[in-house]
Image 1 (spheres, rainbow, N blue to C red):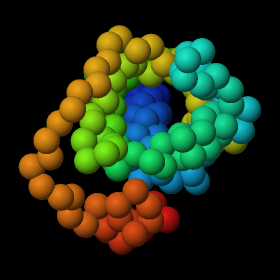
Image 2: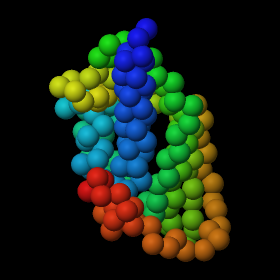
Image 3: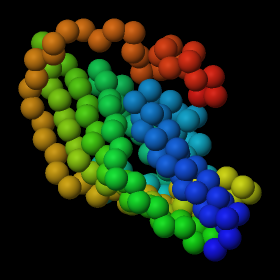
Image 4: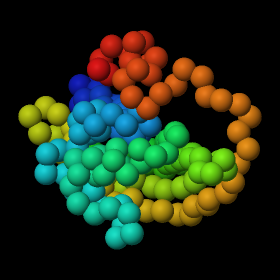
Length: 169
């Protein structure tokens, strides 16, 4: 394999990894546009029959609407494995999603340990998800006692990260 091919493969892996991270960020900031950019227009999202099955863009809309009542999300991604095959790729990424809410003065935390199993394609020079199957390995819900109030962070474009990272707008 030539050095140029190696560099192209490394760039493709990095681009897919960045998109996985940006997907998580779009969920945490409830950012429709950034979430849409991860998927191809005809991309399919399968989060299971009890959660969501439909288009990738539909999933982004569903999360942003159905999670409005939550106080915060935090998605942490690890163990990203990517296999490239020209303009197609497959990946698996482990994710821990933590969701926090308050109801009747009680704080509840939902944690989901899952894996994103994605099929990707590069169309017109842009990588995007063609199909995502999310496997939930285990989860839990528990009452928690917050240490204190959140400071500065928000689930929209007023979050300080938008000022620091101009390309996220």
